[in-house]
Amino acid sequence: MNRLVRYFIDRSFQVNLLSAFVIIAGLVSLFNMKRDLVPQWKINQVTISATLSGASPAQVEDFVTFPIEEAIQNFAGIDKITSTSSEGSTNVKVSVKDELTDNEINDLYQNIKASVENIRSELPQDVENLNIVNEKLTSFWFSSLSVLNFDNEKATHRLWLKNLGDELRKIPGIVKVTDRSSKADILIQLNQKAMARYRLTSRDIQESLGKKFRPLPVGSLEKGESTIAVQITHGLRSLEGLKELIIKGNCGGTRIRLKDVADVRFEIPKKKYKQFTNGVASVGVTLFKDLETDTLDTKVEVQKVLEKLNASAPDQLSAKITDDGPAYIERQLNVLKNNALMGVVLVVLVLLAFLGLKTSLMTTFGLPLAYFATFIVLGAMGMKIDIISVVGMILILGILVDDAIIVSEQYMQYLEKGHPPKEAALMAVRKTFVPILGTVLTTAVAFSPILMAKDGLSQFLE
Image (cartoon, rainbow, N blue to C red; front, top):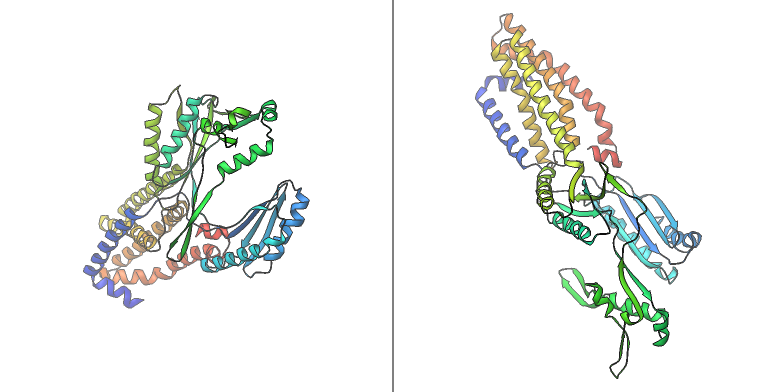
């Protein structure tokens, strides 16, 4: 240690050059780092879901849930299995052990999927929508909005809300936009007299509607090692098109359409609750973003879209941010900036009063240097500036300030005793190295359980 300290004390040019490199590299890393609300972490879970129409919870448990659990329970790597059997559906959650790597989790998922597929023939024939999903976190809550003066009964309001969602989805980084408005349902009210006249039953109507909306497979494409299925879907483009759906016909050209035997219309279901924002009727909109886009840059784009749409909104409609996710990271960054500036000012003033201008400035220079080095490490590790990393930098600021003052004060004591500056610097480092190392190690030991633990919370905090 003495040789290393002596090496840098005797070579001021190399020290200045290294400091300049740390500053430049730190600035480059800082400007290239993404800012996000929370750090990225993974969800170690496989979900199995299925439906069995008309079955009671007990029947779903006996004939669907239990066979699935029995088929997958012996795989290595499973932490626990929890299931929920409700009327007509089941949901089985397989929690994976935290120490498994991504490849091991993927292998376990493939084994679970194969096992469930193997017992497919043993399940009731009416089981539908059997899905096995390897849960992965691809999006995160971004912010919540309220659309003020919204009336769900007005078509212009519903159209403006839809346009708002479409414009927000166009913003890079926004992957999902949901709202809590009541969606218009298609009401098909059968005319019993007309159906009797044409000798039709409700089953005929159901089969015709099923054929209308059933996907039509047309083949597959080979892309590398993957096979992509191609199918044509028949979406509902207009209510008039649905009314013209042919239910029955003959060779003579006679066709019976849906509108001949039923009243087809849109109907808004009544809401069981009402939402108000600042005493004004409103509807909530929730935004989700991906894990890569810069949060603060995305916020700027969202605000631009809201300003544009609010300016042209009908009937005093306006979208207002009510729960601002990016504001949390903004506040933490401001706290870090203000605390760092306050720390620099205090160190300069204290050391200036007792140790002189030159010593105070050189000691203070170590604070930004330490932070620039931190940005280099964070950038090299692929980490972002988020709530956890910012809080960590805020916590360590006090240690940096205290250590800087201790070393400087010891250095000045040796100067006052008549030692040359270089010798005084070496002696100050020797005397304070162990106490400062102990301070750093104490902090590291206090947080080491987070690094050693492998649960979901530790992954979040890491």
